[in-house]
Length: 444
Image (tube, rainbow, N blue to C red):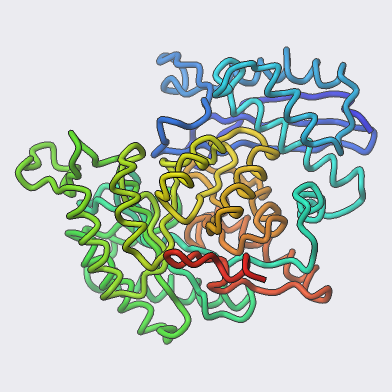
């Protein structure tokens, strides 16, 4: 069945910034999709088209992208007669209409809105759940694997107004036996952490950030890791929870060095450290704390530091700004042995088909794949379906707080309920790469 009508509009994301929503119609009804948006964005990402008109929406309007759907992408898709089950053909068609390597003409936000809506319509056409439709598109056979959630519970970096340079400190309930139990462990530890922070730093230290995490006024990573350790212990889950970091170090890379005091406008250049010194710091944290994954430990173009660290580390090293869900960047990272994990963000590349391709390319080299939200989110839950479909066993979509985050976790609870009788399992730590060792999920 083909598309009869496409209509886009400007809506708002969880940060109060405009974003694109797309309604796509077939004989079966209306299918809706909304597009997320990042704050710490890599320079190599597909282009998120903004209006740039400072007099309106602080320059962040998306009316051009909306018009590109309503005037170009929608009408052309209707005219093409392509069936909604032909996801790859449709995505290729949309890419061709744009005609640029980074979707800069029509906007990745315009194209992705249509791409997600097509997935929803395709699943309805086949009469199957979205995760099943995506799994069939990706050639992944059941039984399904429910992912281990990575809850971002302490915020620093560009996401927070404290001194902390590293952007995210996450809890991973790898020792749970089901996704439902993982949510229980995660939420209980989150509430315990809230009490620990409140007692130490006062009540205003537990206001939540963009992704639902806390941003206490800690002096550095050591202090944040101690807080996490205390909360895990008090909650009684020392044997069930591991820790992950998202350093987002491109945000504090200056003149070939790393400034861990980058939020201080008068930071001392004498104290900037080299990539090698930063690697030593990470290794010391890994020795002291149960860290299993580190994302963006170095700048997005500091390939040498990445390769040096990946060779020496026994944890998962995840590329985000480095790889931007782009098959070309992933290939380079594979050649340079720069990392062993991919952060999969659908809006970094701009179509669902390319997202599937990126995940499979990474997996072909034995990488772990963590499906991810963005800091500016909507109530759309396509990434919950995608992570189950791909069977990668890892998702990060914020703390267990704020509805735009919890919507994804709730969707996964429903999927677990639907699939458990047909043999679905919970990934635990099996989706994580460990140094040169591929994830256990890939070794089956």
